[in-house]
Image (cartoon, rainbow, N blue to C red; front, side, top):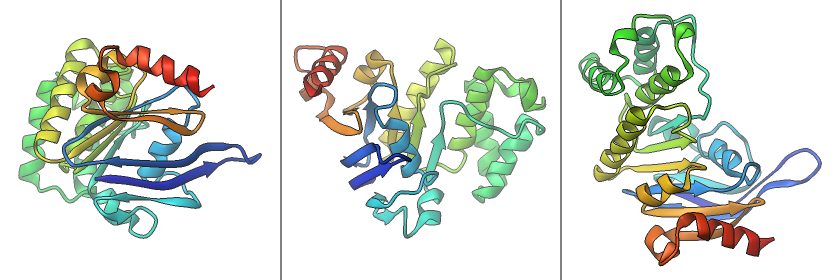
Length: 238
C-alpha cells in the first residue's frame, strides 16, 4: 500500500531530516511509526500525503507515485494531523458535507457514515454547532469522521490519540482494525508505545532521520517490550 524508496529530505542548512528511508506497508497492515521528537516522523508523513515536496527518492501509494500522480494518491488516502486545522466558521455537519463533496461521496453513503461515526464518537448532537465552539477533542473526532467519509484505502495519522478521551480512543482503535480487515492499511505515528505494541502488527523505529528497526511487532519485541526495544536500538544507534 505504501512503498518508500530511498527517500531523503533536507531543510535549510543542509541537515537531513530523513536520510535514505526505505519502508513498505502492505494491505491489511496496522503499521506503527515510532521515534523521538525531531526523528523524522512528521516529515515522512507529510511527504506521503503530499504536503511536503522532496527531491530524493520516491513514495508510492497503491503503486502510484506521489510525485507523478498526486491526485490519484490523494483520492485513496486520508490524513489526520496531530492538530487538525478545520474551517471554524462552518458547523460540524457543513464541514462533513464539504468533505463529502470534495471526494464525491454520494448523499446516501455520507449520511450513513456520518450517522454511524458521529454516534460512535458521541458528537451527533454537536454537529449543528460551529466548529469554533468545539474543544480540541471534539475537533479531533470531527477530523477523524471526515477522513473516513470516502472509505480510504490508506489512513495516515500523526499522533491520533492525543486529545481523545478513553472511549473515543477505543472506538478509533476498533475502526483502525476494521479498516485493515477490509484489506486497507493504517500508518500512524505515536509516542504511546504500549498502544503501538498492542495494536500494530508491524512497527518501524526511526532515529535521527534513519530507520533503525522495522518488522513484525511480535518478532521484534520477542521476550521484551516495545518500550525496551525502542530504548535499546536508539541508544545503540547513538
